[in-house]
View 1 (cartoon, helix red, strand yellow):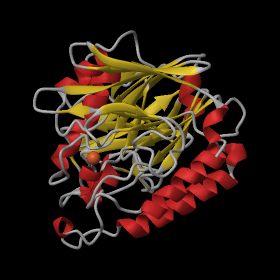
View 2 (cartoon, rainbow, N blue to C red):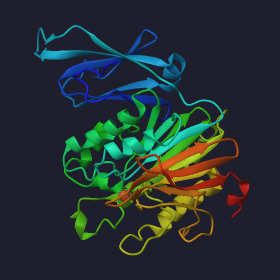
View 3 (spheres, rainbow, N blue to C red):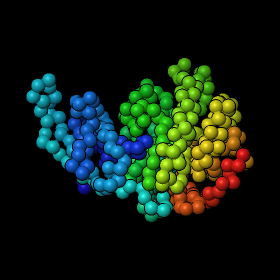
View 4 (cartoon, protein in one colour):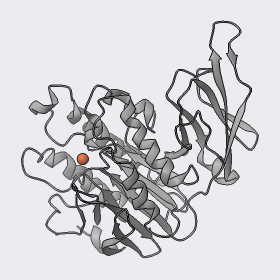
Length: 373
Ligand SMILES: [Fe+2]
């Protein structure tokens, strides 16, 4: 279906906790809702349809869209919004199919560190092989948050790859925290009630998105006293502990086959100064995950290189929670990201470029052996 003029791109279906958050960036004031199986899910503020927004957001329970496998975005373009007798167009509609994650194999693509690139990340995913089931946007998609307009790249990449027909998981990167609009990111991207860390469930896949926040101490001169990341991370430690307390409804829930960790920063690695922060706290995160959640795979970016870290290897400084795939090589000449194909016993990993060329590949065999420390 033709993308309406008022939409900047197709809708994007982000997975957060037990719901899909359907985002639609718009170029004109509109009011909007999504219809699924005859029920409307509105973008509203306590009963008032929102129109003064650049991005609409509708919350839909996962099971509703997974069952229906299609949705209709309904909207009116505002002519003039007034205290009385507001004027708007008739209801306009955009229909889309949706394919939930299901089956015994998951083909996902991770984009990280796009740093404002849009076409190359889209090409990387599109040319990486057969159809995808899931997209992961793992941080630093814009170069910084100096203006809300930079957030468009996030939804443009997601829409270009998924066309609103498969789910997307979004995770914040450290560059996303820089600039006057950084504090508004939560209104433009999917969060769990404003929190940038959350869990999600897609078919047999359970995941936890962790946000390591900035990569230098809060006191670093570059931040100009604008950050309180240490306190933020302490709250996140409590969140991880709470997830473990609720294991039966999270990673031990019926039907969960695979458990993954999404974190822009591969926090179990300790880089040199000034990036060698939170050794104890990140070590605690890694240990909590390794001893309780026992993830199959962790996906990261940030380092601008592509490799897999296994237990005891050179980047395993704090006791990695599981094998870690670091997957975004970014140079002036290259942009390479990561396709992962998860099946019963293993994950095949392909580091691919915008031409579809595989630069290197690896395979992680899922094994209990990793967690016996
Ligand atoms: Fe980064």
